[in-house]
Structure formats: structure tokens, C-alpha cells
Image 1 (cartoon, rainbow, N blue to C red):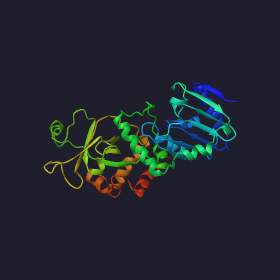
Image 2: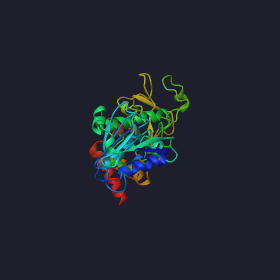
Image 3: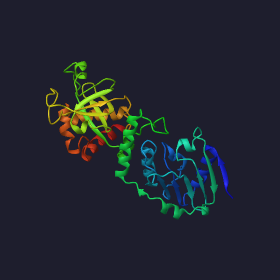
Image 4: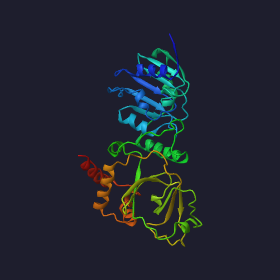
Length: 330
């Protein structure tokens, strides 16, 4: 007999109940997966190896950090465009069909008003349903693309997603090393003021009104919607940055010094979105030691150092930074 589930708590309890089994085959088909949603379907035990989640990889709606967490926990995740159905199904345990996404809005205590029905698993033609949904397994490239599109969405929407208005706390650098998503680039410079910022603001191709930050560099260090770790070796200020606009320098620009100084970048907001990881005191110390050991003293050094990976650290370079960081953690 079908059971009508009214409200977030009733739906959440039913979903957790059918997802509890470690051995049963479990399938979730939802439009969107929100921040921290793994806690609604993964218990403390290792019950993820037979779980498959299919969702729409729509930027601002499906949270890439959660997708990364699910994959790291062993969940099979697949993407399907234009998906709107919401189904939670577990073999021999039942199915929940309704309006609730796998998110705080759908299953959280202060979420949207939701309605669902719980039926026997056999009531759902799960094979036929899956055949009707064109999905593809999430690869590192697809996940990286979702991170990129989400960063661009958050940049344009003051750091927030469609449903999750409060962005989750970033992970640690050590956690980031597991999946290395989202990608970020390394930008070391020595801050100097060779001209009046007001005069720079009057540059015909470079309007600074209302901007939060600006810098110059190569094309790959000024590309919009890419995360950069800014390291100022003057005072060892380390912060995340992301450009909103890239403006090529004119040939008459006195700051143009190819190949390292060819473009301007303008960042319009102080917080463009959820950064790749937290900048802890230990990580900051590791970056300083890394920069000193690698002898990166000015931006021209950094441009040459990161040229092989278009602004990012190569795997051996990242391994050296990670080695310093882990040594400081001991």
C-alpha cells in the first residue's frame, strides 16, 4: 500500500530508511544535488558501493563539491541533462517518488514544502526508467567542467547558488589533493605602485570603478572565472582571486612587457564564490617556504615557472608543495 509523505521530515526519514541497507542495490534519480546532501543518503557505515545517483549537472543547482564527495565515497554518479524527476529507490526496501531534490531545500528541516509517496520497490520499473534517461558516467573532465561553470555562475551571483544561499565551508588543502578539483593557478608577485591608481583608472581600456581588485599578467593569469592563488612576497599576503574581465593591453600601454605582461584582469566582487580550499596558517607557511625554495621572487619568475601548465603547477611542482605542507602538519 502506498504511503503519503507530507513535509521534509517525513520524506527525509523515508529516504534514509530505504537507503540504510549496505547490500541492497540503490538508485537515486533527481534533478539537483545540493551542498552537503551526502548526509541524507550515506550513513556512517560503508553503504555507498551499490548506490547510483543520476542528476542534472546544471551550474548553480547541482553542487560540484557534493558530487566530488559522493564519488570519493564510492558512489556511482551519472549526469543527465534536462532531468526533473525525483526518485529514491532501493531493491526490496521501497521507493520514494515526489517533489524533493537531494538537497537541503528538499530534505532539510527548513526546506521547501514537499510531498511524496512511498511504494514498494517492485512498483517501479527501474530498468525501464533508467533506459529512458540518457545519462553518462561522471568523469574527471565532466566534473572539472561543472566546477568551472559553477565558479562562473557564483561569480555572477555574489557567490551563491540557486537554492543553497549559504556556501559551504571550503575543504582543506589535504582534502583537495584527493581529487584536485576545482583547478586553480599559481600567481606570485611583488606588489608595487609605480603609478597613481587614479591615473590607471583613467586608462581607456581599463575602468576600475567599482572593482574589488585588479592585476596584470599573461593571458592565462588573467582569464575570467579561473581561481588564482595570489601570493604577494612583499608582505606574504595570500588570498584567492578570480577575474571577471580580461582586457588586452594596447601596444602603447607603458605596462605592456611581453611575454609576461600582456593583459589586465579586473575582479568585481570581494568574494567570487567558494574557493578550492581553506587558506589555513599551515598552508600559508607551506606556500611561503615553497616560493622561497623555488626562488620565485617577482611575477616574471612566476610566469616562467608556471608556463608549462598555463599558470598552474605541474604535478612535480604540486608534489613539492604538498610535501612541504605535510611536513609542517606532522
